[in-house]
Image 1 (cartoon, rainbow, N blue to C red):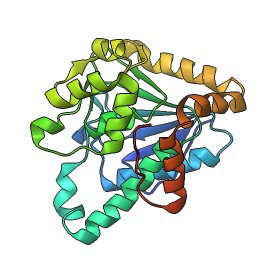
Image 2: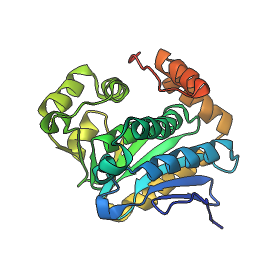
Image 3: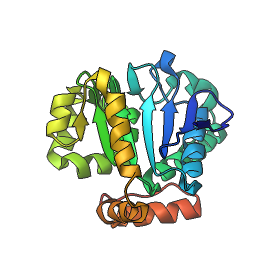
Amino acid sequence: MSRTLDLGTAKIIGRVDDDGIGWLIFNQPERHNALSLEMWQGIGDVLESYAADPAVRVAVMRGAGGKAFVSGADISEFDTKRSSAAQKDEYGKIAGRANRWLATFEKPLLALIEGYCIGGGLATALSADVRIATPDSRFGIPAARLGLGYEYEGLAKLARIVGPARARDIMFSARFMGAEEAYRMGLVNLVHERDDIERETIAYAERIAGNAPLTVRAAKAATCFDSEDYKEGRRAFQEKRTPDFQGR
């Protein structure tokens, strides 16, 4: 029997199923799941809960509505939640906590991607260990087209996954790419049709959940965490500050 976390917001859903899968669902489909401040708070709360819950063997992120995984930041609240220095500081603390959990979560983390996965949404998906997408998914970072800055740690993650040359192409051109190209460059691990993706993702997650948890955790540590960035992420989390990732 599934149980749902009490998060104080409907825009993030945390649900733990009997098969050991913990779901983190971005639930603002009317805004293509753009991340609001309360959603950042919810992300940190869900991952903190899953990290401490032995019943959760693997976590899966997905967007509600089927049109987008996450489309970036919710710009509609910038004037009300990020207009003053104090508000920006508070926003940074809440979003920073969520990003620290995404960076240091020790259990396997999957991303089920349908539709748009752009900007900050792609940065969030890059935190996953395995990304599974539908053929019609679209990926990109349009920061250069919009005149926006992009955080260094997101660029470092992108470069580690697809390589520096492809990362420069993605950033310089600000173009969108389909799932097939994303798969070829290693940005996406698996591609399944929309009718199949939920079933296939659950089957994949259940396979992970059925394996020895200490072995799985050790494998993640060996492949992802034996880096200066991981050590910095852990230090920053313990010190409650924003990590200074160096891409190594």
